[in-house]
Length: 148
Image (spheres, one colour):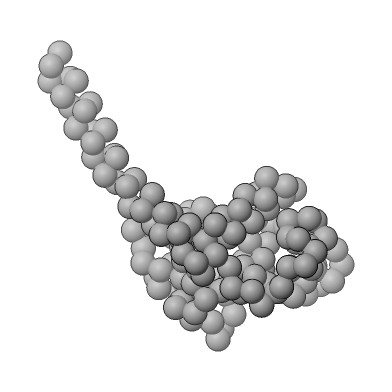
C-alpha cells in the first residue's frame, strides 16, 4: 500500500513539474507591459493545440505565421498592436462578423472594428496601441466568452 501511494505521489510531482512551465510562461505574458508577436503566438497556439507547451516564442510565432495568423512582414520580437491582436483572436476563435469583416478575410482593420461593435473593446480604443499582457488575456476572455 505504501508503494501505491508513493508511486501516485511521484506521478503527481512529475505532472506538476510538467505544468509549471505553462504557468511561468502565462505569468510572463500577464506581467508584460507590452506583449510581443511571439508571446501572442504562444498564447493562442497553445490554446488551439498547434504549438507545443515547451516551444519558444520564436517557434510558436513561426508555426502560427505559417498558418496565416500573422502578416508576412511581422517578426516574433516586435510588439503586437491592438488591431493585429484582434485579427489573431478573430481567426483563432472563429469570430463571425459583418459583411466587410467577412469579405476582408478578418483583416486587422475590420477585426478591430468588429471587436468594438461587439463591445469587446471600448469605443475610444486605439488600433495602433501596444497591448499589455493583462489586456490581452482580458480581451481573449471576452472573445471566448461571447464567440458564437
